[in-house]
Image (cartoon, one colour):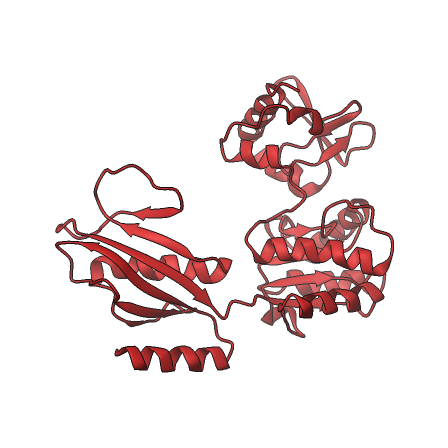
Length: 320
């Protein structure tokens, strides 16, 4: 496919707001059929149009491009079998061909204004839609067409809206609700046939605890959670120390004081400080009591308690 044809395809995809990734070869080392400047478009369904080398790189490029489209973040990729030192910001993949050539590519996603469906007619729901428009987040009417669903019903048909959202293919479901209310709704969803794996993907409250009071403040906090999901950052309530420990990274010195205080226990699954006098669940493992803020975290812990016990032990070793 010629450059002009690629540009015409990109323009057509932009007009339809159809996500895709433009892939450009930025460096090669022989032997390889790719060349610097070669380009291709990978569409959301994995269709590759253009040329970035032979079949040795094709599967990797398609997989990486789909990941970039989903996350809305560009990637710099190196496909090679050399044993060079890892470079920051470069994603490495093995070269499938026996030729052992090297290809480096820049993958730039386009048209990835992630779609959001806001359920509810409350003032907070209206404000959330206004914030979404200001952030250039594409609003859709149905959960089935959304990557993220924000439930802002706040007492008006909460259960029906939640069931509708959880029954959709939306990747993230957030709800403006207290933890206690969310747990009651989770129990109701189980009665309606929603499994725990899907319920574990529900984020409620929708954003961090910022002391929001007015509808606009509540919507702003909820949209923080939405934006985190759209940017691939997951649960924005997780303290940095817990995220680092979960990935096996050493916590920063002096950060332990902010993690756990008297009368609280940091849930090692999500990093939220839980009151030891009023937890949702308590689990004993290796003689120690673990306190949980929701069913999702409790179930996750029970599936691999050794992992989360190690995370907790590592956090306690941090010097205040």
